[in-house]
Length: 188
Image 1 (cartoon, rainbow, N blue to C red):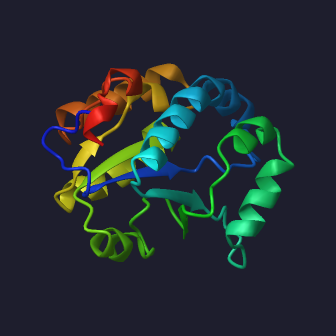
Image 2: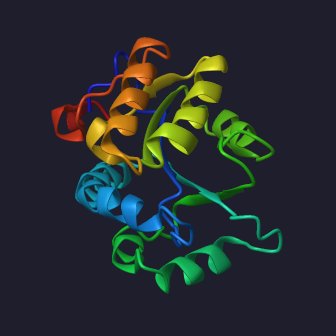
Image 3: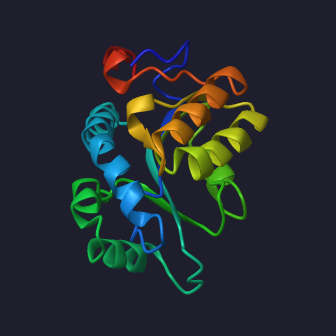
Protein backbone atom coordinates (compact mmCIF):
# COMPACT_ATOMS: atom_id res chain seq x y z
CA UNK A 1 0.00 0.00 0.00
CA UNK A 2 1.56 3.25 -1.11
CA UNK A 3 1.31 5.58 1.84
CA UNK A 4 2.83 8.81 0.52
CA UNK A 5 6.12 8.26 2.30
CA UNK A 6 4.80 6.54 5.42
CA UNK A 7 6.96 3.74 6.72
CA UNK A 8 5.41 0.39 7.63
CA UNK A 9 6.04 1.16 11.30
CA UNK A 10 3.86 4.23 11.55
CA UNK A 11 0.54 3.25 9.96
CA UNK A 12 -2.71 2.04 11.56
CA UNK A 13 -6.14 1.16 10.22
CA UNK A 14 -9.18 2.62 12.00
CA UNK A 15 -12.44 0.73 11.37
CA UNK A 16 -15.16 3.14 12.40
CA UNK A 17 -18.64 2.10 13.61
CA UNK A 18 -18.83 -1.15 11.64
CA UNK A 19 -20.02 -3.06 14.73
CA UNK A 20 -23.40 -1.47 14.28
CA UNK A 21 -26.96 -2.43 15.23
CA UNK A 22 -28.36 0.06 12.70
CA UNK A 23 -31.11 0.65 15.24
CA UNK A 24 -32.19 4.06 13.94
CA UNK A 25 -34.58 5.40 11.32
CA UNK A 26 -32.10 5.53 8.47
CA UNK A 27 -30.57 2.15 9.37
CA UNK A 28 -31.96 0.40 6.26
CA UNK A 29 -30.47 3.11 4.03
CA UNK A 30 -27.07 2.72 5.65
CA UNK A 31 -27.21 -1.08 5.43
CA UNK A 32 -27.65 -0.88 1.64
CA UNK A 33 -24.59 1.37 1.42
CA UNK A 34 -22.54 -0.71 3.90
CA UNK A 35 -22.79 -3.99 2.04
CA UNK A 36 -20.48 -3.04 -0.89
CA UNK A 37 -17.71 -1.81 1.44
CA UNK A 38 -17.40 -5.07 3.41
CA UNK A 39 -15.09 -6.89 0.98
CA UNK A 40 -12.72 -3.94 0.45
CA UNK A 41 -12.45 -3.47 4.24
CA UNK A 42 -11.82 -7.22 4.71
CA UNK A 43 -9.08 -7.10 2.07
CA UNK A 44 -7.49 -4.04 3.66
CA UNK A 45 -7.67 -5.63 7.12
CA UNK A 46 -6.01 -8.79 5.82
CA UNK A 47 -3.18 -6.72 4.30
CA UNK A 48 -2.68 -4.85 7.55
CA UNK A 49 -2.63 -8.03 9.65
CA UNK A 50 -0.24 -9.75 7.22
CA UNK A 51 2.08 -6.76 7.53
CA UNK A 52 1.85 -6.74 11.33
CA UNK A 53 0.25 -3.29 11.37
CA UNK A 54 -2.31 -2.30 14.02
CA UNK A 55 -6.04 -2.31 13.45
CA UNK A 56 -8.16 -0.21 15.78
CA UNK A 57 -11.92 -0.59 15.90
CA UNK A 58 -13.45 2.71 16.96
CA UNK A 59 -17.10 2.20 17.73
CA UNK A 60 -20.00 4.24 19.02
CA UNK A 61 -21.60 3.16 22.28
CA UNK A 62 -25.00 4.36 20.98
CA UNK A 63 -25.64 6.15 24.27
CA UNK A 64 -25.35 2.95 26.30
CA UNK A 65 -22.89 4.09 28.93
CA UNK A 66 -22.44 0.65 30.49
CA UNK A 67 -21.55 -0.96 27.18
CA UNK A 68 -18.19 -2.42 26.29
CA UNK A 69 -16.68 -4.16 23.28
CA UNK A 70 -18.46 -7.46 23.92
CA UNK A 71 -21.87 -5.81 24.45
CA UNK A 72 -21.50 -3.76 21.27
CA UNK A 73 -20.50 -6.75 19.15
CA UNK A 74 -23.16 -9.02 20.67
CA UNK A 75 -25.93 -6.51 19.96
CA UNK A 76 -24.65 -5.83 16.43
CA UNK A 77 -24.62 -9.56 15.65
CA UNK A 78 -28.36 -9.66 16.41
CA UNK A 79 -29.23 -6.66 14.26
CA UNK A 80 -30.02 -6.23 10.57
CA UNK A 81 -26.33 -5.78 9.71
CA UNK A 82 -25.34 -9.11 11.31
CA UNK A 83 -23.77 -10.48 8.12
CA UNK A 84 -21.68 -7.30 7.71
CA UNK A 85 -20.63 -7.42 11.36
CA UNK A 86 -19.77 -11.13 11.17
CA UNK A 87 -17.53 -10.51 8.15
CA UNK A 88 -15.52 -7.85 9.99
CA UNK A 89 -15.28 -9.14 13.56
CA UNK A 90 -12.21 -7.92 15.47
CA UNK A 91 -9.38 -10.40 15.91
CA UNK A 92 -7.61 -10.89 19.29
CA UNK A 93 -4.65 -8.80 18.08
CA UNK A 94 -6.88 -5.82 17.22
CA UNK A 95 -7.61 -2.86 19.47
CA UNK A 96 -11.16 -1.71 20.29
CA UNK A 97 -12.07 1.77 21.49
CA UNK A 98 -15.58 2.81 22.50
CA UNK A 99 -16.45 6.40 21.57
CA UNK A 100 -19.34 8.42 23.01
CA UNK A 101 -19.75 10.84 20.09
CA UNK A 102 -18.93 11.29 16.40
CA UNK A 103 -15.13 11.58 16.44
CA UNK A 104 -12.92 8.67 17.42
CA UNK A 105 -10.72 11.16 19.26
CA UNK A 106 -13.40 12.83 21.39
CA UNK A 107 -13.30 11.59 25.02
CA UNK A 108 -11.45 8.37 24.09
CA UNK A 109 -7.91 7.01 24.62
CA UNK A 110 -7.31 6.89 20.83
CA UNK A 111 -4.63 9.61 20.82
CA UNK A 112 -2.71 7.91 23.65
CA UNK A 113 -2.90 4.54 21.87
CA UNK A 114 -1.68 5.97 18.56
CA UNK A 115 1.15 7.79 20.31
CA UNK A 116 2.15 4.57 22.07
CA UNK A 117 2.15 2.73 18.74
CA UNK A 118 4.14 5.60 17.12
CA UNK A 119 1.50 5.93 14.40
CA UNK A 120 1.69 8.91 12.03
CA UNK A 121 -0.50 7.68 9.15
CA UNK A 122 -4.13 6.69 9.60
CA UNK A 123 -6.21 4.70 7.17
CA UNK A 124 -9.87 5.38 7.96
CA UNK A 125 -12.80 3.27 6.86
CA UNK A 126 -16.34 2.61 7.98
CA UNK A 127 -19.62 4.46 8.48
CA UNK A 128 -21.00 6.99 8.24
CA UNK A 129 -18.58 8.69 5.89
CA UNK A 130 -20.26 12.06 6.20
CA UNK A 131 -20.42 11.97 9.99
CA UNK A 132 -18.16 9.75 12.12
CA UNK A 133 -15.49 9.08 9.48
CA UNK A 134 -15.39 12.77 8.53
CA UNK A 135 -15.29 13.98 12.17
CA UNK A 136 -12.52 11.48 13.00
CA UNK A 137 -10.59 12.53 9.88
CA UNK A 138 -10.96 16.18 10.83
CA UNK A 139 -9.62 15.58 14.35
CA UNK A 140 -6.78 13.43 12.96
CA UNK A 141 -5.84 16.18 10.51
CA UNK A 142 -5.74 18.75 13.32
CA UNK A 143 -3.31 16.39 15.10
CA UNK A 144 -1.05 16.27 12.01
CA UNK A 145 -1.76 12.68 10.98
CA UNK A 146 -1.35 11.72 7.35
CA UNK A 147 -4.75 10.47 6.15
CA UNK A 148 -5.84 7.74 3.78
CA UNK A 149 -9.59 7.21 3.34
CA UNK A 150 -10.14 4.61 0.61
CA UNK A 151 -13.38 5.65 -1.08
CA UNK A 152 -14.55 2.06 -1.49
CA UNK A 153 -14.19 1.48 2.29
CA UNK A 154 -16.49 4.28 3.41
CA UNK A 155 -20.29 4.63 3.22
CA UNK A 156 -23.04 7.03 4.25
CA UNK A 157 -26.84 6.77 4.20
CA UNK A 158 -26.95 8.64 0.88
CA UNK A 159 -24.22 8.14 -1.77
CA UNK A 160 -24.14 11.86 -2.63
CA UNK A 161 -23.41 12.72 1.01
CA UNK A 162 -20.59 10.18 1.02
CA UNK A 163 -19.08 11.60 -2.19
CA UNK A 164 -19.24 15.11 -0.75
CA UNK A 165 -17.56 14.00 2.50
CA UNK A 166 -14.81 12.24 0.55
CA UNK A 167 -14.23 15.40 -1.53
CA UNK A 168 -14.00 17.43 1.68
CA UNK A 169 -11.51 14.97 3.18
CA UNK A 170 -9.43 15.03 0.00
CA UNK A 171 -9.54 18.78 -0.64
CA UNK A 172 -9.52 20.18 2.89
CA UNK A 173 -7.85 17.45 4.97
CA UNK A 174 -5.40 16.33 2.24
CA UNK A 175 -6.59 12.72 2.48
CA UNK A 176 -5.64 10.15 -0.13
CA UNK A 177 -9.03 8.78 -1.26
CA UNK A 178 -7.99 6.20 -3.84
CA UNK A 179 -9.78 2.84 -3.72
CA UNK A 180 -8.07 0.28 -1.49
CA UNK A 181 -7.27 -1.86 -4.56
CA UNK A 182 -5.22 1.04 -5.97
CA UNK A 183 -3.01 1.17 -2.90
CA UNK A 184 0.25 -0.77 -3.13
CA UNK A 185 0.40 -3.47 -0.43
CA UNK A 186 4.18 -3.81 -0.72
CA UNK A 187 4.82 -0.64 1.28
CA UNK A 188 2.83 -1.61 4.36
